[in-house]
Image (cartoon, rainbow, N blue to C red; front, side, top):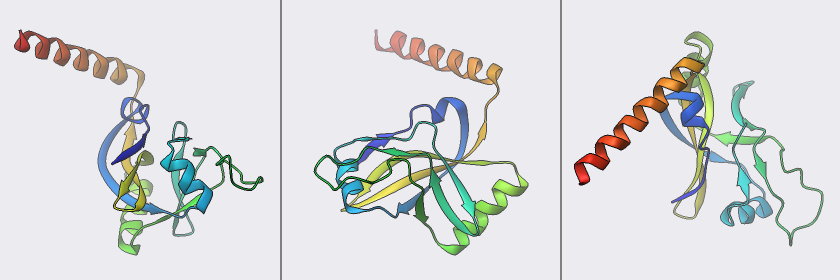
Length: 144
């Protein structure tokens, strides 16, 4: 089930592949995420020393938890070693970027959907908007 979505990611980036990773969270962060008190806008994933890390993701502190938690702290992602190496190679050699797309639930666990993406230029964004608008108009005509 989708909890939080990074709406800006699909506009700014062309997503080539989606990977689901676990997130290392504290208890109050889990409660905040279940209440949908978070934002992935402007966040990104980096692989530092062979460890994938989620940076700049805002998780609003749970109001009944102790004070002092940093809402934008770095969070470690949980992936298999082979996946980490493959992603690290794609980022280094093929100039891809790792973008968080959504926070979802799988059973009782919270997972992060990460996209292997390339950035879009301004003209590509305009073309993408035109294409989406054209498809919307075609669907409206078919319904009538």
